[in-house]
Image (cartoon, rainbow, N blue to C red):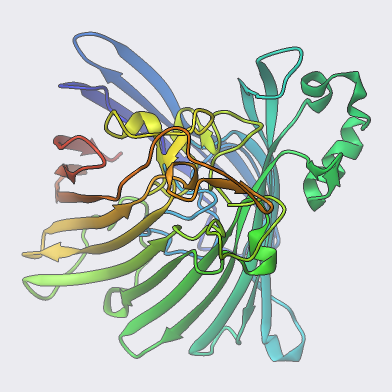
Length: 451
């Protein structure tokens, strides 16, 4: 979420303030907002960033939200997932205006068996590089997002079934990019963007999203949540040609401490009855190797999906230099030097098999921890595979070298403890070991004061 320190030894100061909805009442109307600032400083440079700044208004089941705010898209564990495919908290949030039903609304028919939620949003990406421009190398671009999710099961039921879809698009100023021959007004262009229609042989903008089924079951002491995200980038999913790819997850939550957990889990005064206590554990398998790119794959007009890369936007599915979705798909500048890469790909490694686990809990009553670890096998892109990239039935032989499989092991551990009055002390340790990234590690010491 843009929370990055400067290289080498540095210091950071984070200041944040929030007003949330009043949870003690059921007023028809309410409002909230928040701001989070981060200042980084080292011997060489300094930088101040706005991480979040937003205001929100609620009227009954509806919400209007404006600004830059943390989010994720789709069915994943909200606190411990490695990251949703479409939008995760890996990058700085995109400023936008969003109308939504943020929580599942139970439809008052059939005994409350069905519930829905969803959103529609318009965001501003600023001036970003564009490839096919005849007039300018950059253009002011926009971000479009819609989602719709349903739940089957009464609110009091132990079993809930979920399904939904999300749709995101980079687009904007096509007339400036393509020239006066573009042929669509701004309103017409937006309709093509929103509904994914083709114009002059291709879709307008860079489209990406996922189709998500899920299941939740309430055991007496544990909540089980099983989820899956099936990816689409070019169009292979419509023919199930890349159905092997997806993010698969299992989340187990200990209901014996089922409290409202804020972003900085848990609250001061969190109570444990034993020396070791677990709150939540998550296991995920991220697989994006198929992409409908093999010679024996079901053929599609667009060829292999080439996740997160785009012919229209050279920096692909990124914002402020960071991938907007799951971090297992890596930008070229983050990996070791020397890997082959197709010259128009911002992400040089999008064919990945990754095993991920995370655990959240406490030790010796007072020490809260979050641990994350992953092991991945990385295969580059189809453009750097022995098969080459494809368009329709045409395969282009690899011209930039062959990527050979490399493995990567990464770990992250956060520990913190509260002290009166309102002080929290903690540390974060992280390390990378493998052949994808340069071997390295980091240490962060934290001191937090809550007012």
